[in-house]
Length: 481
Image (cartoon, rainbow, N blue to C red):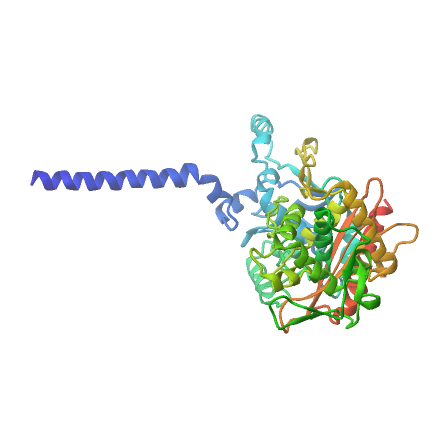
């Protein structure tokens, strides 16, 4: 009997220990995680009694809390909600928070450690708690230009300051109105959310940083960068550019988008191959370089790495172990190559920044309740993607694309513009995706842009016809500052 009692005591002791460990995990170690999870309505209800800090574009509050005079003391209001939705996200009584409303929640609600002194002063003086402010890196003019250009289309635009990584624009279409998701009417919130969820255009998807598409011929600048880095090729190197390229170890042939040879006798320089977007030349070049060299170059631009800006961006991908035919297709941004608009803006920015890839960021400053600056984001470098001399060479090649090649719709009077068009299929029967990436070369280039248009139509005209004019408008908005 005593042995059974000892065994039972041992078992119950283990259960008690397990219970104590579980309680410790929930109430101590994981307490903040559970508290800050989107949809924690108990915390949300308590926070509606305090004034949440604003999200700022320059000095303009694009998200702010307004007194209601009701049981829920404050309501979140968004100025030009659909315009800034990919940045702010929403703050919902029913669905929690997204965007900067989620990632910067402890700043906005004033509970971050940086506000400890403020909280003590508020407590001693009997003042109501007030949250801090978040100043974004967004340029209002660039954001508006991108939004206007995307109207009636489906896609995304990202603009970056090359020297710093500051995100100047992050726009999607279709978008949504965060005001309706942040109301105090649960029934209306659920109805609108269900409508957005059911929309096949996926307006709740944060396209600039999450949507992955094949980059098509914009990826040729990555392959060109790898070619220059190899030391075996220059802008003047002669490449084969026939009508069709026989894929190695395959019965299939890759053809040029216009069905023609890329130069007299099927020969073309690397610079001209980029200007006219010669598929066969770059497919051949991809096999000459090999997948490892292209992957190394892509990685230096940010592929296969997840960035937090602080929104978590989807990881852009270069295939892990492509065979020779797959390598040829990957060299022109097809097969399993996938990129976000953010990633391709980073590629353009790095080329324009003497080959240095900067970490992208969306939050410029953290401010106190009185809007005094408490913290400023300092630019940081991610990688040396290219030698400065190679970046200058590739810049000249991309300028030629805009001046004499497939990107003429991006020309700006009196400004040298470097760019690259791209189109791709998302599947055998899927609509085309159109791309344009660009920057304005200068001693200190102010802006690099990536535009992606989904379901763009005829692939031979969409990159220059649809995406390039939007990139031009965004660049002009920044350059006019």
